[in-house]
Length: 606
Image 1 (cartoon, one colour):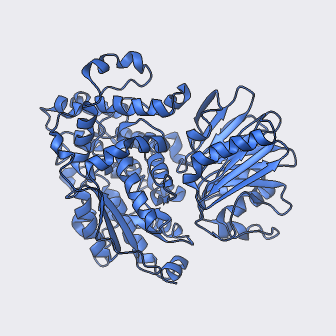
Image 2 (tube, rainbow, N blue to C red):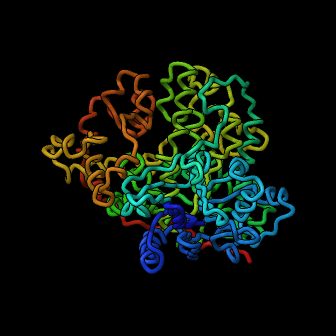
Image 3 (cartoon, helix red, strand yellow):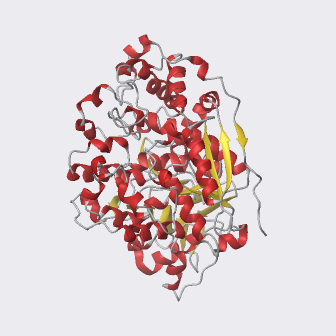
């Protein structure tokens, strides 16, 4: 779902859409406000192409763009309580909505939408209801009885959300920056796991799990407990009234998601509506590691597999659109978002509206290859905590916006609240990578699903080395991007980088190229501040670079920068040529244009 609201009460105004939320204040009522709404709706319709809703109460406006996944017939937004005093627009899915309805026996629901419970929960429990929600969500709730409002975002930040302030005293909320950047003097990312209350006039954190303090846990590793927790996380995400599938790269995480989904699909409401055979989707350059591994997993699981090929030139042609939609200049996010952006368009063209994906596992289990150099369990645990807390700026942002660009929803079971609590409570000694003991990265997860009697996956897939998505789609993808950037950014331009871009100064030509595009779309100081900076190797935090002295000379977010770890690591003697993109330009055009291979039409069972 996607929505947007304008709430202008007591000098404050808010706007939200199920995939686009905003809160505005002190706008002139009437045509001016409606024109403003229409302008932002046009910018955000991609997130919710199924329906538009606009609600006005005095000088408060809530508008909504809907992507209908659950109860598409009657779940249009905004949503209300019985007397329509409470008004809500929501972006996301509430997986435990049926259980929550049972806790509200005296309430009457207008729709079958999973988000319909929010207004009633607020009526019953006040602002403290948010922690009761199990799902991914961003919402704005307007209480017309006193013209107050609250804004909430899910625990990890799976759904995107921004907050902004106008010079006129207004407050704006939007799912994307492009829904508020023209009207706010300052705006920023709305922090995950937080609630904003207009009564208090400030943010407070509602999500306070044990791991958040970064204290070192001591619970012994129990593979069956971990397995059950993840299976439950996947099963609850089969809640859908529209065709869906799984993103399958052939790596451990997406393969486990696909395997569990295939096992439990039969007998579900989704299977009865759309058939019990799972559809899987993969993207890559021809001959890429992911395509080969994904096809093998798909054959093993018996999915209807859709394989999409793209060329380096296809990706380069899409870069500007990608940066406009994902709203970042972070190098690794753009590298990985581009294939996902291209694939999402193909998936939507097949009539699919929801996919289940494998983001979050590497952050929870220390799966990135640089974790091989973690000096002790304390450092490893703290690094995983930092990575999870930053997910909303990286992989969650990519997964949400790359898919939403085409009206597709991505669900991420590894970021289930209950599963994270189980996984982050394990003594991190078990997550330490110890090759001499046969423990590679994410061993605790691999071992949990290593079932000899009823295998989830082939052994060599279960123990396949980590490939970052931007690497797995084909190594020449990143090399091609560097080559393209080197043709557009000169050495002379790089000399002035610190003056042109004093904040998060780009240190490579590729980063400079992305930054130029980003600044053209989002020139505000606030916009550039929403993007994190700092040195990184193989997706590490800046702190983790200290784990290996050689990494400081080979800073690149690609997994191949983990020298001495990745089996296809960059040549340590050639860091400069690799970083500047001096690779043969013929790799860019040597393949056919993006095509769909072995992708039978989507069969819908009525």
